[in-house]
Length: 172
Image 1 (tube, one colour):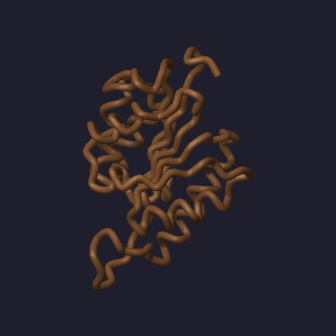
Image 2: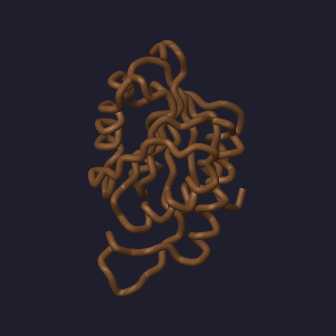
């Protein structure tokens, strides 16, 4: 693939987690989270985008979110469980995305707030339609995702270089 072709990044926040007496990293999904993760997966599958790579936090709730969402996809992308996503800042997430091989065109990142929302805010220098207004109004609730596009190699991704093209939350 050419680096001149638009790349797609989906920033996907894990679904609603439960609060059992375990460490934060080990928190599982709540029942509503399981339903919302599958709904988000159906919405992503309906987009018709074939994802090349999924970068998923190692936290239990993100792994469970991804397992339920990807079950809805016609084809499972390569998945990398990356501990650096857990509690990552937007800058740390950009650094991670900068390491993405250039043969990956469409990438999903399944992570946590505030990092995922912050990343969506700072990457999107422009937006299409009402995506930014909806994201600003709704925030980034559990199981929400933002879709951004940019052109160029992954190592050139930085604040303001992408366009926010879509936003979805379970109550949209």
